[in-house]
Image 1 (cartoon, rainbow, N blue to C red):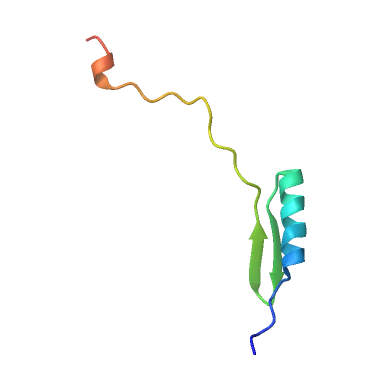
Image 2 (tube, one colour):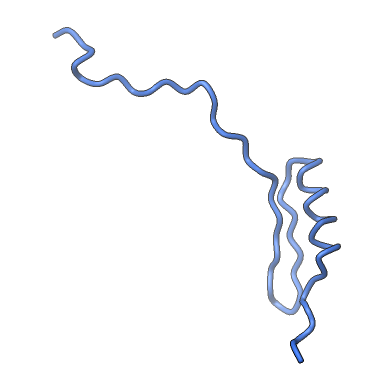
Length: 58
């Protein structure tokens, strides 16, 4: 027989919903073990590559 789960899947889904809706990290601590959920971070858009030294006139 396996040990019971520290936290239920329904609780994790609830935490994820709060994290995503409020754009915050959500943590719970049970018996000294921390379990957290963070919202998905959007990819950085519109960044230009750094110019190389060949692009500059000296």
